[in-house]
Length: 318
Image 1: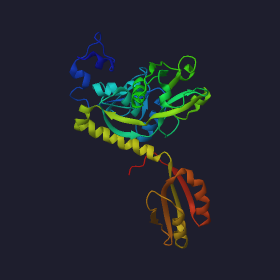
Image 2: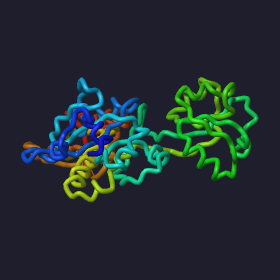
Image 3: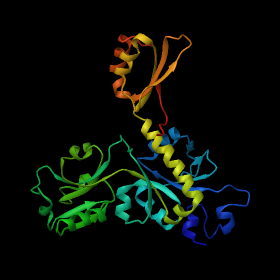
Image 4: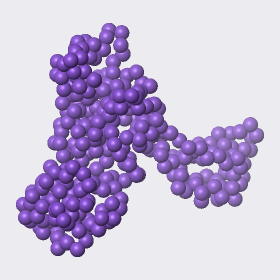
């Protein structure tokens, strides 16, 4: 048995287990082994899965959370190494950034893009940053310089694209504080740029933008059951993300005011109309961006809408 795969299950040569028991017994349902990112994205990932309908809770074995779906086995791993374990088949699937797939050069199937991050929905960026007073103003100025980064492969590919030779060293963390005393420049991940500015660094160039990806092992993707399970998960996760900035607005309107009220309402599609028991009244409902609700509700009231209700949404499935 591959002991590397066994380690992910808490199995070791001193705690052997048969191949049959490793996967399932005859009466055990099939399971998908899914890796979730440990660290900065951990809590937002749990919340995303909750909105998608999955309850995932930490356990005493911190790298093996509990799931209320008997068809899922969850493993917590750093996003940096997720794509390697998926590629090797130690995990069937996992969530990681597109940047780490590129950094590791992993041959995996990308099931879907999930636009969420630690602080928002915008992509994170790998950038080249230098001290504010540095004489480095272009990629060419990096020639012969020393660069620190956690993403050595990404940095080296960037330098190769610009025909620049520089020394790239792996950084174990706190990369922003290394310039200018220890290195001339850094290649660092940023979401808002606040940390870079706080350390008196300016962005020279953006190398790569990245969103979270749901990825799958190539052989697992060919398995009909695993593929169907992943497609279901992808549909629910993307539906949960689609609902994050939207709400359902409902109101009651008389015939005389219906055209005016509908004219106010933006929606994904045409608003839904239902006749009420009183023949000249209608129930109107629509999905719209939460950011516009505060402006629209007073307009609806002025146009004759009554019984206005705003409801939060967990999922929107097209």
